[in-house]
Image (cartoon, rainbow, N blue to C red; front, top):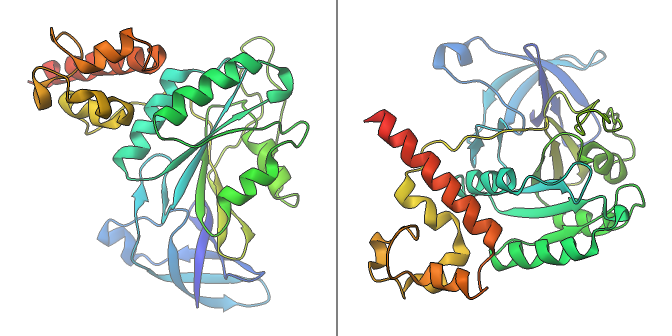
Length: 295
C-alpha cells in the first residue's frame, strides 16, 4: 500500500492511506544503514501487519519532490507563514529570515498576519505594501473572529502546505478552524513574556480534503541562514532587482557601501521599504562576519 507520513514520534510513523485510516508504523532497519530518516510528508510504501490495530511497517520511501531541513518535512508545495499583527509584536527580521530560507529551498510563500481584530489598520497597509512589493501574497485574518479563514482554504486547496511562524501567533487556532476535528493544544499568551504558553510540540500533517494537506510545525523564535554567501543575499530580496541596473558596479554591487547604487537611491526616494533594506543590511553583515571567521 502507499500512504503519506503525517506524524513521527519516538520512532513511530503515522501513515495516512489517503482515505480514512491512519496506520502506526515502524520503519525498516535498512533506512538507518542507508542514512535515511523518514520525515513528515514522505510518500511511502508500507505493509499492513495488523488491520484491526491499524499497525504496519514502512518498506520504502518514495522519491521526494523536495525535503526541508527546518521544519523537517518533505514534498512541500508551499509555505504559509503566520505572524501576529500585534500581541506579540511581529519580528520582521525573523520573517525576512524565514522568507530567505524558503526562497533558498525554492518553496513559494504566502504571508498571513493574524489577530486583525486587535486593530492596527495602518500597520496592515504598511505590511501589505512592503511584502507585496517583494512579490509575496499577503493575507490578513482573525482566528478569533474567523475572518479570512476561507481565503486560507483557497490558498491551501490541492497542495501540501507548511504552516510556520513564531510561538503565540495563533497557528494552532487557525488550524482548528480549517480543521475543526484537529486535536491541537491552543493556549493564551503569557503576559510576562508575550509568547506562546501552550504551543505545537511536533510537526504534524493534517488532511484538509482530498490532495490537500496542512503541516502545523513547532513555533520558532530564531533562525540562522545556512549555505548562503553574503554576495548572493541580494538575490533573495527580489524587490531590489528593478533598481540594480542603475548601480555603477552592476553585478558586483551589494547595495551597502558603493558610491553609485540604484537600490540605495530607490530607498532614499521611498520606492523601497526601509525595514526590508535594514534587515538586508543586518543579515549581510552577519553573513560577512561568519565568512571572516570561516577563513
